[in-house]
Image (cartoon, rainbow, N blue to C red):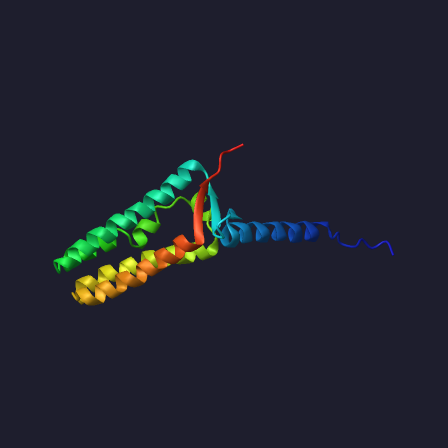
Length: 160
């Protein structure tokens, strides 16, 4: 029985590496960088500049909603579409990957839903030109904003 049996070492290394990759993917895609807040919300931990980016995007949403609402008041559906388009999925692509990795999956789902909602508002405002329909859509998107603010907070984490 001098026959050499193949070593299991490479297989073990591959399995361990796959487990590490799976754990990292779970952490960065699903869990994010979070802790439980004192008020019951999930606190997303970001570097100070990352937090500034997220808050700047949220202020952009408020400004865009104000612009869309003002345009709705005058039935200017072209202006509604322009305001909504600025907040659509195109804006989502501006988010740095490092920030996206720190966001929990539920937050990403809500955020992308908001961006897609604004894209739908822009398309429907142009094609349907129905202010009441657009106002209903805007209410649905704002409902997602409220849900997000009820569930999440952002904390700047100082590097150690």
